[in-house]
Length: 116
Image (cartoon, rainbow, N blue to C red; front, side):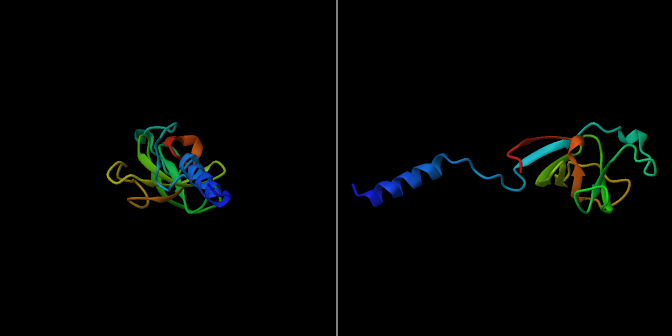
């Protein structure tokens, strides 16, 4: 066997055992650690998790998630995660978009799977 064939076989074998990169949406989870929607007060920030246009509190709030909502994670920036509601698995919002896609603070998520 030539050195070139051995190198090609080694690269092919390495590709088979190399960990797969996380794909967007492979990571799912739930909103946790916030007050229930029964304590909702938009002005006080109670009973919801703010969905923002970017990863940080300085970005505009574009929607809300509620305790128990199921989300799909698409990206991460520090402690912030870009998420979207799983279709039909989020409560009807009291404020904002019906299916928010934006950034939330990760402390209030319980996530699993192959995460970014």
